Amino acid sequence: MTKTLKCISPIDGSVYAERDIISLDEAKAAIKRAAKAQKQWGQLPIEKRIELVMAGVAKIGEMNDEIVTELAWQMGRPIRYGGEFSGFNERASYMAQIAKDALQPIIVEESDGFERRIEREPFGVVLVIAPWNYPYMTAINTVAPALIAGNAVILKHATQTLLVGENMEKAFIEAGIPADIFQNMFLDHGTTSDLIAAKSFGFVNFTGSVGGGIAMEKAAAGTFTSLGLELGGKDPGYVMKDANLDAAVETLIDGAMFNSGQCCCGIERIYVTASLYDEFIEKAVKIVSAYKLGNPLDKATTLGPMASSRFADEVRAQISEAVAMGAKTHIPKFAEDDGGTYLTPQILSNVTHDMRVMKDESFGPVVGIMKVNSDEEAINLMNDSEFGLTASLWTSDVERAAKIGRQIETGTVFMNRADYVDPALCWTGCKNTGRGGALSSIGYQNLTRPKSYHLKKI
Image (cartoon, rainbow, N blue to C red; front, side, top):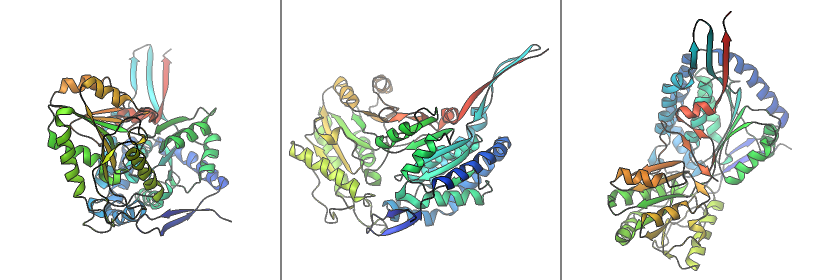
């Protein structure tokens, strides 16, 4: 009997999409075709690969109205926010813009006696395993530069967003990219692990949970397959005495609550200097109390359901445990909170690092806010985490922010902003957030291997 993947819509619990899982033999055959086609793809002029990739990006833009509604059904984001094409296009465009410079050879010597240089060579076939929370933007981070660098790409998308991979495959093939070069596959976890263990890929990029990252490393053990892993996060914000308080509250709370808190670099804990603490709480509560929780297909909705009742249950459990340990809730239960995917956003005070809500990844619309009395205390608290993706510092003093930033164990340091992926900067993390780096020129280094040429002229 054929196994299927089912997208259960968070809107009403219905099966929104269902696709058959392909077999291990079918997947191996497709990867073999990809490896064969990659030889010719990699020989195309880089200008032609860029042209075709950006034509595929434009095709996604043409599908945006349909995509926005599909995303609401698949993972619950309100249609009022218009989807992800702006960021999708920004990231692909930047990686296209820098490709020639990022991939050009490093010339060591060009003389009468020698040519010595280092070139970048594609891995061959790249597997991209993309998450559901920002399904287009997270996928394009690797898909665009991998293709531009001359690789073939296999895309395995999350079950919650089954239609995203199909849409991307359709768009890129219609744009002229060969069908064997960019393939969307419906795979289960076991088949994916078997393919990795069989050395099917030159590079695997995974975005998802820590548990998923561990599974990737176990599957790749002994194969020497290169891995890029973006895993969990528990990103902090720190508001200092000289911060613009209104801007800090607005940005940090939005960073904590947007997309129902389901953001890789969402703000999950906030530390506020003692003199601003009470006012920060007051302003934050006012913002969150004004949210409209509801059906994401309603343009009036500002906060949609969480993608799964399982995820919402974890957030409720963290809040309940924190309250039992002395935390204070500030947002009364919304009428639309159904005990399932529709969840009241919550602000917690009187929190400590003994509570899971301040230590474990929440990935939902809840944030704990703590009072601090010094930079040293804030730094220690920010570093008291198994994760390290981003940190958001709020001050008017650039030197102070840089000094504090050097002491924080994180992949990105923001000053006076949060929850943004800049394609010109390396998107990376440390500790249990994973390893490797996407975007920027470093993204190209991670999607290619160095090859040295030492040519002696006789």
